[in-house]
Length: 254
Image 1 (spheres, rainbow, N blue to C red):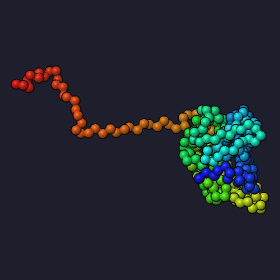
Image 2: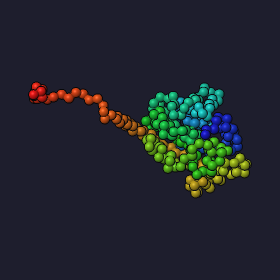
Image 3: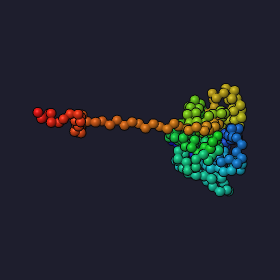
Image 4: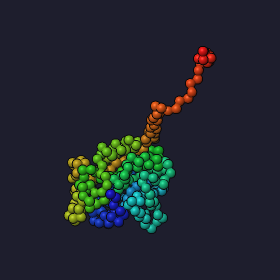
């Protein structure tokens, strides 16, 4: 199930959504490389997080899923949003230097097809930043936020998905130790939750963040064609037998 654009906007306009944007923006800023002169693709609902990178990059594209719905971005500037199928992106091969995926991986039907498509559009040595809900996190078990929908991931699942498609993880981090509630007292204590949660590692985190780098060899080996078994009937017509040249056919008439 994929939340639509109205649900996304309603969440990010709520007090909890504003705090979520602040906490995740710190993670993206920490993981992002120098983007000056680069082409950036924001995959999913990434408009709240691309503004700090928009002015530095050479070109920024926001690809939103047709199932979610579109939102023009940025405001007061030429639109950079495209509405498409994430598994069939209308982008040239090897043209993107940095991919930032937020509210994306958990909503696709086939994550392997998505990874093959991202490998296709990624330039040599391109990097990808993926943010997904953690399987055992509190946010993934509640449906009052967009992180409670779709398919959450464990670290081993995401690591395997990236490695199998030749994106090598380089940096991992966790975030959102804060309970998914709009109570003012909890929101004011968000920094305390984040600092205290890191003492226990990823145990109480609800979000996984990873930065991975593209490798240059093919993402997926070419599939072998399946050999088709053709059954030949036992009573199939046969060609006439030819006699060897050394045998005289007249001998059979004597």
